[in-house]
Length: 92
Image (cartoon, rainbow, N blue to C red; front, side, top):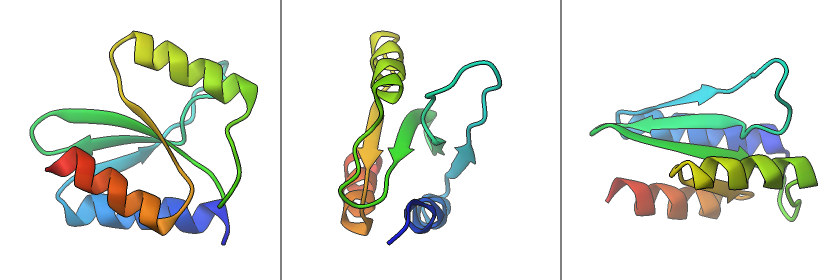
């Protein structure tokens, strides 16, 4: 399974819950998470998506820690089951 399949599923499942999963592209700042997930009730989270078994690169880990220091939750998801667990945690 490729990362793009996991990303597409996250987008679809987020929309099913009434939210949106925005693709992040930040010129001049590499390593930002792939998606900004916005859910009803003003919930904002970041998701870094990986192919199964793949791990974030060092720069991605650095950005994750920066965002967490600012008070944001950042999730690393590498499977459909990971998407289900993520959405269960953040929507309920």
